[in-house]
Length: 136
Image (cartoon, rainbow, N blue to C red; front, side, top):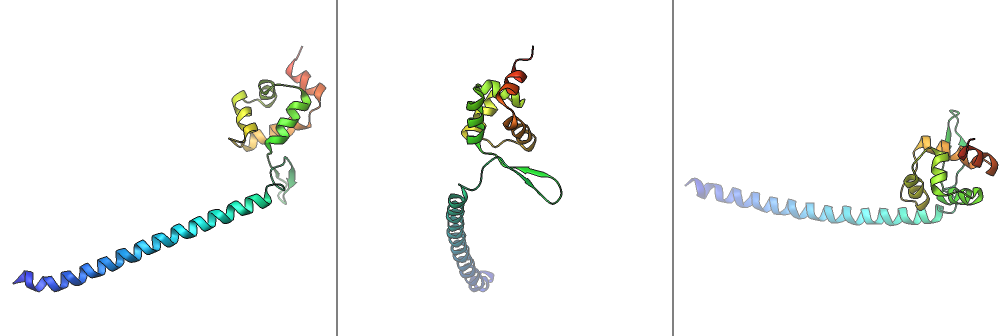
């Protein structure tokens, strides 16, 4: 007798569960579509902002702190101007040669403290850099 009484209630619950699952699936599809639209939009924004951004500059922020943006091409060009190897550049920066390689290839972005050292090295002239590399 109890099974006969519970059967209609269970059927109603099963229908509700099925409808909830289909709603959840529809919401998941909608979220996936919106996520892909967002990523596509972010890629477009990056592509349009790419020429403007990613240079080593110092911007003065109202709180007197400096924010430095990193561009691997500038580091590569400075190394070429100085006529030094990645290993020597690493010595100037106080980092490993692997770090310099990863920064130049764009695999890794330097930390804030390293950005400050990079900015200092970018200001060095050839004689001063070579003097720092070969102290005698």
